[in-house]
Length: 101
Image (cartoon, rainbow, N blue to C red; front, side):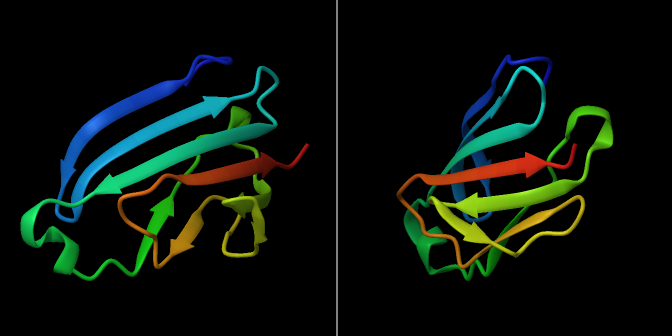
């Protein structure tokens, strides 16, 4: 992403279903907002999905300082990755990543 321009992907086929993804950065790069939706087809709903791992590309490589999943704070992150455990399907997941200053 560049500046405050969002990245949007719709209907990307995966092993677990089609994924819709929107990444919206803030102008100063201190926050990234993700909207993720996984829509399984056929037997894809039966396939085990234990987690989704995000690797945010932050401004100048800033470390992740805090994060939330669906508005609830989470500690499931490192400096460079965030884990969404047991992600739901067929509904949007909202993720916010805040970076260190």
